[in-house]
Length: 443
Image 1 (cartoon, rainbow, N blue to C red):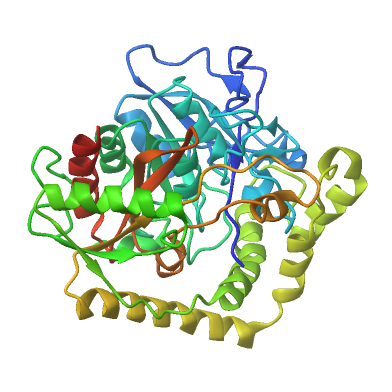
Image 2 (image 1 turned 120 degrees about the vertical axis):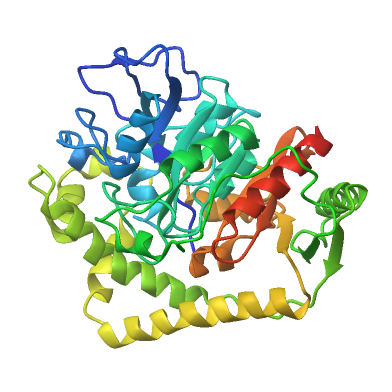
């Protein structure tokens, strides 16, 4: 029921077209970037002063924020240089049930660098492809459910979805206050960990960050053997597939070689897809209109964006429509149903933690996502994915707001597939350590 969310880049007159980018991960490059800084790509739903924030939509093509998002301020203070904005699926893939990963009316189609006409997945597709293609070493993506983990996995890079509340969402086009977070995507665990340290922290403008524990630290020791003596519960999605089983066996052997233990668990959790989707529908209108209220754009409501899309259908909706926008409008008045959805989050968290405690686990491991499928515009991703193997993990962590890191495991027919470490709330540091040790051993 849930969708992944994807992302693109928009160009303004201060910047030059990224003609050297054959995968369309970037639309623009910042020619005034600081040559001594760490070059970083920024997903185009994140505010960067004097650069358009479009969320991939032509409706926001002329919106230039007057202030940086909180995490952009932190990155600049740490001598990161904004290399450019990266492409996404329009409105983070939350416009239509038939959307195509990596396509927006502003930027067009981002292409996975592995194979012909392969899908980049997720709304943070441009950020993932920019790193995977070697243009930059690090980028920022955002995730509601799968938007960092999926593109990281299918493009063969490292992606970290932090605990919701560890990183401020102030200055980021929202979908859901319950599930949204920004996170780093890079070519190594080390640079992802370094960047997460920079962007994490309390922000007076984001109440979720008030919940960071006073004793919480994020200075992971990436050089130690962090897998030794740890117990990991196996999420067996993909085990029924021959290639999936091969990948899982490889991951299990790597962990065992480092002195860790992989436990076969009985996971009887039922994914609450309908309840989660309603929660996203309800919060999307509420949270988006809150963001648009202070934005220098004539579009202040979801209805005004729906009207814009209808008036510009040929340019904005050549491949898919806006059923999710319309459903969000309808859901916004159903307050009792929303209360039920909020209770569902607590149930998911309880069952998640209960399963960890039942087997005395330090974290879960599992395959992140099946390899990239072909780009298909007739019917979108849902049709294309039905025609190939499918596995994946991360949905429960997304609902719970818990951390999830994915890193390269192996390839299937030349296409990358990632391995996930998923833990309970505020275990971000431990997950980074597990991933770093696994990365060294996997080479």
